[in-house]
Image: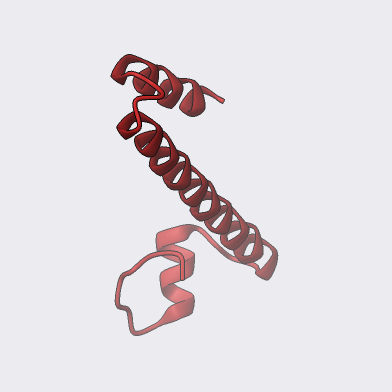
Amino acid sequence: MLCGKDFTDLLKHLRLSHEIDSIEAYALKVSEVAGMSEKRGRFSNYVQELQARMKKGLITGEDYRRLITEWKDK
């Protein structure tokens, strides 16, 4: 779903809270949410990879911060 809120009338909730008034708008919003979720997953994997490299001494803390910042700026 688009948000974690409880509601009694799905259509009213979608229209008022998310400004969705058609199936096309709903599909677009769902794809946006899925894209954000995928991006968060990729970022999480990247952070874990960098942390592992830092523990092995392959990169410094400064390298870690720089690489994180560069990834966010993409």
